Image (cartoon, rainbow, N blue to C red):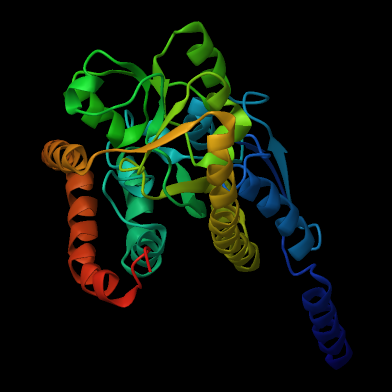
Amino acid sequence: MKLLKALTGVAGAIALTTGSAFADDLRWKMPVAFATNLPGLGSPAAWVADNLTTASDGSIQVRVYEPGKLVPPFDILQSVSDGKVSAGYTWIGYDQGKVPAIPLFAAVPFGMKPPAYIGWYYYGGGHEMLQETYANKGFNVHAQLCGIIGPETAGWYSKPIKTLEDYKGLKIRFAGLGGKVLEKLGASVTMMPGGELYQALEKGTIDATEFSMPAIDQILGFNQVVKYNLFPGWHQQFTAQYMLINKDEWNRATKAQKALVEASCTAATTRGLAEGEYKNGKVLAEFQDKGVQADQIPRDVLLKLRDVTEEVLEEEASKDADFKRVYESQQEFMESYKVWDTRAYVPADL
């Protein structure tokens, strides 16, 4: 009996040191909403998949499927919840029609900068509220913040935007809560995946579009079709991506496997932000040589956009309890964060 116990102890020690402490191997198919060649937006998904395999010594293997190869980009949430795929990687704001509060975790007009958002998410209860928000609407998923980038541009246009009146009647691709703001201003807002936007602009299906930051928009070629690129990205000061995992798959993972997913996604969030911050300045500086007119939205127009944004957010909060709860939590955090933000950082012009 003593020998048996001793052998059992040795076997356990070997298991812990070789990685076989993972009870069952996880083999996940993961469709993504963004091509993995898109810096900061799609690239974290590929990095996470590779890192999980390496860090788990093969216990966790995630196979990435490029947009549309397995699941349409806008169907990722439902497919993961239904168990058709084990995981997915997406900008969850696409699902605001199903989960009204979800854009608050994806991108908020005139909202937090990336450092503030991850502060609230990790330490202000954001992660827990996100799980509750999905569960309250009947979705069987675990959501893990797995990427973030800084501000988008305010879009690509065939002519300048000088007043709020310029949005009236404009056929524009605009996502999330920012799209609701432009609808309130009379724009005809549509949603379509990034891979369809170049052709839609070229054919005149849409007059204008926003999608992401300069390093990504350049890859998609918007500057080849229209020449006015507006700043700042008031509608998305941060853009957060998530790894959605079927809840049953998540529950059967061991503590060690869960810890690796959480650690890998946290690392991917840092790397995604770093990649965008590294590349955007150079791309933007070269736009002028390519005939792009990078314009700033006039301050008075920005102030009016902010007023309309506040109306939209209050309206959404009045219609959905989860939206109200999350919005109030973010607003409360921002009251104290602004004290730090306005005092601590050197102004950009210095």
